[in-house]
Amino acid sequence: MVGAGVKGSVWAGAFAVALLVSGDRVAWAQETPPEDLASQLRLQGYRCDEPVTAQRDAQLSKPDEVVWNLRCGNASYRMRLTPDMAARIEKLD
Image (cartoon, rainbow, N blue to C red):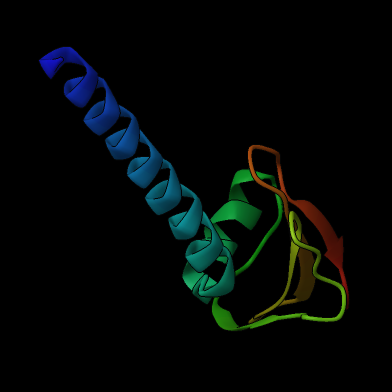
């Protein structure tokens, strides 16, 4: 019966890891600094000279899509972040 105990502990460990990973994804979505958002903008071909502020838009955000308003020195953007997908970006200025 030792094998059954090992299987149970493996499943419990896997479940704990899944919770940590999913919890970290939520934390990242809620606390993304302006520099990280600006990096994503640049990777997708947009210009952000100097990230100034980033504010999460709670009204437009959904459980699987977090919306941020990013203000750069040269422009402002609305970014929709969905896990495992490119950000949807809208220039506001």
